Length: 133
Image (cartoon, rainbow, N blue to C red; front, side, top):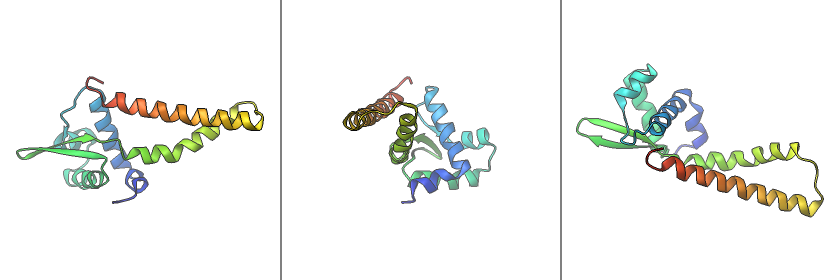
């Protein structure tokens, strides 16, 4: 499997992911056809198919076949790797804005902050997968 960072480094693949997210957030849970992705992005069908293959192999999209048509849906679980990697940087940035705490209090605050950020991410992931969102 390709490194998730290599997969999302490509601008066209990020555009496809954003399109699938927008369509899912818009209440469409049956997937998006390749022809719709081609039309929305203005990219050739072979190019879209190539990028969808990479996204599928990375587990970022799932495909449903219906006759000759394929419908793609977003699968966000692999992005947890990216989120986990970014989280310490985000927490570090937040810590710079706060006044310094004594040693043990700072450690406790860091632990609580990490737990809260992790819980927020988990809840956001759950809610984003609920029907009607």
